[in-house]
Amino acid sequence: MKKFSFFFILVLISTNIFAQATIKKVIHTHARYREEVEVLKSNPEVLHGQYKCHVMVGFDGGKAYVTGYYENGRKTGLWEEYGSRGHYKNGRKVGEWRYVDKEGRLCQIYDHTKRQFVLKTEGSQPFKNGQLLDGSPIESSSFIGGSYYHMSLCARYWSFTKEAIDANAQGRVVARLYIDETGEVINYKIIETPGYGLEESFKNVFEKILKTDIYFDPPRVNGKPKACSLATDINFNIKQ
Image (tube, rainbow, N blue to C red):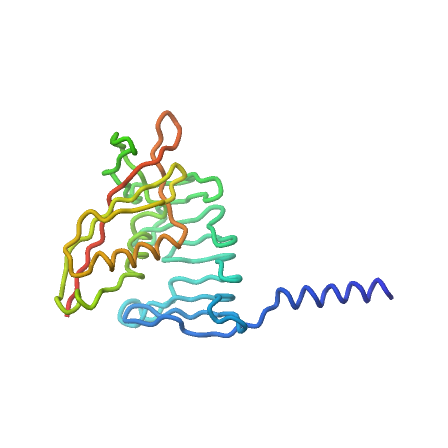
């Protein structure tokens, strides 16, 4: 009886630790997307529970195109993002992720634990304007997830400064990304901008993307991955 009572107390303690009360709320609404989340009742700033990001009516009929779960502010379990799917653990992608192109066709399978491709098709669209840190050119470096996944991230997070909106501005912001030998982006530098505060819009987009656990397939020299830099851009076009 004493053993049973002790076990029952342990179960109650465990339940109190892991079964935390949550509340639902909409945390971000604008013309393109609506995010519905669960947060801790004790701390509404911490995501904990189910997450859905809906494309608003006029883009894809209110469809939820990013779904998954958070645990104490970190992504966990199965996630579906822009038609692609895989698992997170402690906020990082793990195991095999299956990525699709704009038409929903499989373009990449990437093992995020082993850091290697299982499948990579022509639809991956590698970057071809990169170089090693010593200035030597590289043949190519692929964005993990493919171009559609990359563009979807950009479309989700971009926004415009008041200056750009007032001027009905458009133009291309170009940045050079600095990537370490594991493929993670460690820094970036804006090298071209049309002005109107669009460089701030780029920073807003890119710094949010960096928090989504993205990286590149680094170039290899004699079979060993090497740090490099790549040029990338975002075209901004405000239509009133």
